[in-house]
Structure formats: C-alpha cells, structure tokens
Length: 279
Length: 279
Image (cartoon, rainbow over all chains, first blue to last red; front, side, top):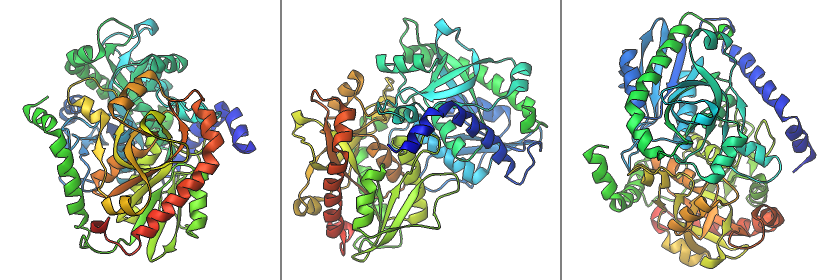
C-alpha cells in the first residue's frame, strides 16, 4: 500500500460525496445542460418475469437490430412513452442453462454496454429483493435504495476491505421520494439467493433493509461513467423469517412483479418532462 | 421453468463439451483458419504487482491512446515479442479507494472490452491464487486450470444452481502442458480473499485445488465470444493451513509474482509460431 492510498482510504466518506457530486456535474458534460429534460432512460431488469409486464405497460417492442454484440443473450425492448425514450434491457437467458442471466457479472456487462450504445440520461435498476422484517420490510413493499453496497466481497486487507464493500450513495431524489409513495432504505448486493452467516454479518454492517443480486454492481459501472442511477426493489421474500427464501421467492415472484411494475410506472410518469435537477 | 430448460439442464455435461468444441470452431470464424499462427494475445492480470514484472519481461509500453473508454481505470501495455502482439491488460487502481480493481466485476468488464477492442486470438488470465495442500498445492506452484467454476453464487433453485456454479472446462492444451512444466487442476472463483464455511463447501464440491477472485468470470465472458482462454495461477497462500490468508498472501505476493512471471514467459515462448490446434 502506498501512503497516498491510505489517505484516500481515510477520507472515504468525503470521497464518496465528491464522487456523487462530480457524477451529477459530469452528467452535464453530455452536451446537455443539467436542467434539460430527461430524454433517454435505460431500465435494467434481471429476470424476464419482472421485465415483461413493464414491456407491455410501456408498449415497447424488441429491437430487431440489437445494439449489443453477437454472442450475448441480452435483449433490448424500446419505445417512446410520454416523450421519454424508454429502453428495458434484460440480460436474457443463459445460452448454456436456459435460465435468466442473474447476478453481478451479467448485470455489470449489460450496464456497461447499454451506457455505451444507448447513452442514457438516467438508469433505473428495477427488480425483486429480499427484505428484513426487523427493519420494517414486508412482502410487496417497493423500496427506492438510498445507498448500495456488496456483502460478499470480503477482502480483509486495509483499504481493499472498503473497495470490496463498495458503498455508494445513490443520487438524491427528494421530490421523487415525496411525490411517489415508496419506502427508502439501504440495499446490499451479493451473488447468492440465500444468505450465509458471513453474508448476514456483512448485510448487518451495511445496515441494509433489502438484499438483491445486481444493484451494487450496476451502481459501480454507472459511477465509472457518471450516469445517475436509481434502484427500485420490490420485496418477494422476508429473509429473517422461517420460510426458505427460494420457496417464498418463487411463490411471490409474479404478484410482486406487478407491484414493481406499478412502482416503476409511477416513477417513469414522474420523470416525464422533468430534468435531473428536479428529482 | 420450461421443459426445454430442464432438458438443457439434464444434458449439461454434453452441453459444456459442445460449447468448448463450438468455441474452437467459431474461433475459426474470425477470418483466420484454425491452424493459422496465433498473432494477438491479451494477458489479463488483476494486480499491478503481478503485471509489472511481465511488462518489463516483454518490454511492453503503456498505450498512450487507451483503447478503453474515458472513465475506466483500465491500463493496456503492449508490444511485439517473438512475433506475437502482446497486450497486458490490468484493471487499474480503483478511482475511489486507490487499490487494484480486483474481483469478478472489473475482470468481466476488462475482458469484454479487451475482446472488442483488441480482438485477441487467445486470452491468458495470469494471477495469484490460494492453494489447497490437501490436494497437493504448495507455495509458488504454478497451475494451468483444467476447469473453472464459481464458489460464491449459491442459487438453490433447480438449474439456476448450475448456472450459479457456472462450471466451464478450459481449452485442451495437451502439448503446452507436456512441454511447459506446470501443475494442472481445477480453479474455483469467488469475490472474497478469505473463505467462509459456505465457500469451502462449494470449493470442495467444485473439486478445486486452487481458488482465485477472477478466473470463472473471465471464462464466462470469453465463452460468450468464443475466445479460447487459459488460466495460469501461482499459489501465494495455503488455504488449508493455520496461517491467515491475508498475511500469507501479502508476505508471498512479490516472490510468487516472479514465479508466475517465469511461467507466463515459458507459455508465451511456447505459443510463438504456433496455432490454436497445436496447443
């Protein structure tokens, strides 16, 4: 470790705030004033069951000329809704196993490629999550994440440990939060659907009320390119209950996807005609 | 789950073999016959300490016109060595924390971007790893991975569980293995430097002799684009010993990087003038 690295580590919280501020500044750099109306949105959704109701709601169609390279299973649905260019990007079915390409690796890649090919003003990561009833979460609640972090990247070396956790505050959206009825809390991300004791300790350290499998990775990639990102997560299962997560998740997936669908629609309705400064 | 998904799941091992075979087939599709000499190599190295001895050995220089987009910390070193276009790609220092951008998210992104901008015939992922002495690993051993898988993506839903583990056989390299003195064994990947009991159970299920933090993610991305990839991993710490991994890792990192350096050089010397069919 060099001394400069240690200094960066010690000033982490101010560095995070600087990063968020400069992200908003640099978003201006896209030839658009910060108070210009939001025009292009990318909604990243990990599962087809979560994505299709939204595709129907916004009357989007699948892009016959995929903006993505040959070889990837990623799917883009797009269209215009209330003056907004809406893109729903779904990582698609794994070519080998035929299931949704969930998790941080696929989420990182589609975020990277979507930013470069679609140049969004704003990214929305919408999906389902586990919730902690001890922190107030209930099935079908929809949360807007105030902060994201990882809970399965334990690197017990000074500074590397903070890199692993990768806490990122999300963009402030006080008007959105007050006008669209949503819960607000911290999100923790890991590549497992279940929760090991080590994961649980990290999630508690992250002070998270919800856990998902993509959010912090999407936040990381979006932060590299200063694209403001908001996270909408609907609770499919209560992590701190006796019911096994996989059963509860599958049982509630379809119904909770409709609650998510409704929340995303209300958020997109709010965004129509507004600028980043009005969030 | 649809029926077709189940069928894919049941035939997984033949699907994996098919994938490897078709990867080699499709590599031919790059306007180059399969028996053409390998010309462009991308060596992905997660840490600067591991990368710099190789940069010096091959007398590479940092690319002043980065092939990567603004915003990313990724660094490309390149040059010509024994007729090969050699690129060493290092994910760089995290802009917030100043430490190497280790782990699967950065590794996935640099692999994706390197494939598209540098169009390699072959990728080498070179790095350090933890080894299991119960399976024969010792400090400074260099392994060529026979297979890669994840150990921290537990998704206990049928078929999703196999997607999470993501086993991939690596390209067969019988000649390389017999001519360059290397150990051969399975590699398991996760985003933590330490090993939780859940990780350990998955690593044992993966039958791995070494564990790292990038390999399976690089294999996943390379497989999307059918780029043959080999994994060279030098053992910095013995996971199944009493010594704490972080201490042992930091103590051995510089010395073991030299052993890695030597192995990579011998592999690259072997590749010079050969085709993919001669590996």
